[in-house]
Amino acid sequence: MIAELYALIPRHGASVLFLAALLSCAGVPIPTSALMLAAGAFVASGDMQFLPVALTTLVGAILGDQIGYGAGRAGGQPLWDRFRARPKFTALMDRAHAELDRRAVVAVILSRFPLSALGPWINLASGATRIAWHRFTLGVLVGDTVWILAYLGTGAFFAHRVKALGTTMTSAVIALTALAAAIWLGRQLWVRRRQRAA
Amino acid sequence: MPDQTSRHPVLTGAVIVLFAIALGFGTHAVWLFSTRVLSSGKPQVEGWMTPRHVIAVFNLPRDDLAPILGLTADDTPFATLNDLAAERGLAPDVLLRQVQEAIDRAGAGA
Image 1 (cartoon, rainbow over the protein chains, first blue to last red):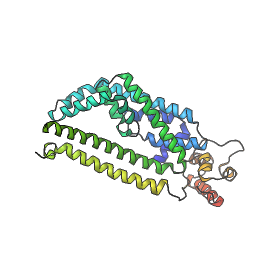
Image 2: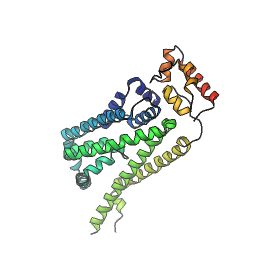
Image 3: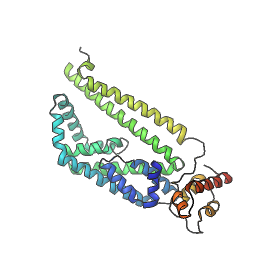
Image 4: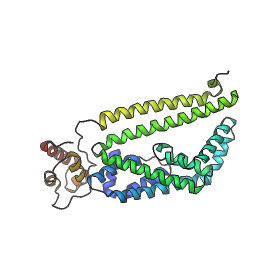
């Protein structure tokens, strides 16, 4: 399956990366990171040029992120409010909102890399909670650039093991994302416990 | 002091599950990286690879690959081996076997 996706790059060029980045950042589950590793390997062998590949992917990713943010802004607020209305979630979601608002740029950057699995969700949450567009876009610009450079560079360096590397990176990203979510949720529980004890 | 887990069983459970997922996938990632990515074993040629990729990854001299893929002196197409096989009217497996044999002959697998 992944080999079929890799084969699309020689057939259609960097436009595959543009489309994959756009769709995955908008929330469609597409293995864009694995495609970038393969593109890095093609850059290393001289089949592709680094700059056009990186820029094309970056434009696709930014557009996809904007779609997610726009969707959150247009339709996410009622959904957010519905969950927030449940007493069990109110405090948790208010704290999440406050933290996202306070550290919007850093949260958006980290959700591109290394916590890529959170990216589409952070896009929706940013729109739904009305994070300022310029702060969101700044985070996206920096985060997507780091994400793309990291994967293209790693693919170029490990060009001889690009398929194995794709699986490895997927597992690593899931592990890091789960760890970050566990730490964040654990911290929320700890804070609530201390507040109750006080 | 009341037991915290009894007050937030769902959230506490979620934390435990998330830690378990992190541990499982983290171990998997480390295992894959050490056994597959850093492996000294030779990678196999595959249909999605391109001529330049094969030359670079397997340290195969271009002159050894050119007759198999029908490459001209200054044309190394950005196309997969599967597509090149189709252009030449060959089954992909046949072409891949020929390329793998050339790599083995050259004794130059990465």
